[in-house]
Image (cartoon, rainbow, N blue to C red):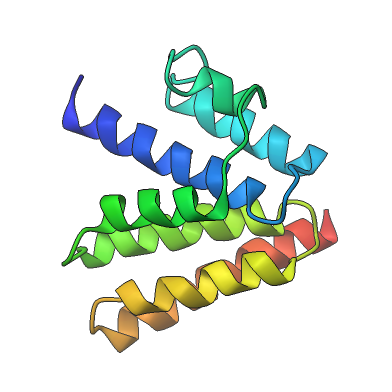
Amino acid sequence: MTESTNDSKQLLKILIGAAWIDGKIQPQEREYLQKTAEKHQLADDPEIRPFLYQLRTVKAEECYQWLEQYLGNHPSQQEYENLIEAISGLIYSDGDVASEEAKLLTQLQEYQPNNHSALNNVLKTVQKLYQRYVTS
């Protein structure tokens, strides 16, 4: 497995965990996860499949553990931005942000590399995603 595939798989697991963080996966979140899995050619991956088809639930602690593993001690700005963009897309896909999801986004700030101009770019991306989901 290539490093890129492994990163994609880790990111998808985090997204699945984020979808479960409020205790249930909304239909829009399920669709977002399916599209993401297909995009990265992971829909039939034996490790991902049970999560993707809700044969196994994910506890919040597990999601946070995957998050820490993905970002490590010193995430790059690109890794951080990719993660924020992917999680925001998932969270806003159903047009509703649960308190647990908001807490996850807040928790992500702890991992933010010290680059404020990049943070502004990420926040603009999140705003655009939110507006796209609200107006569609």
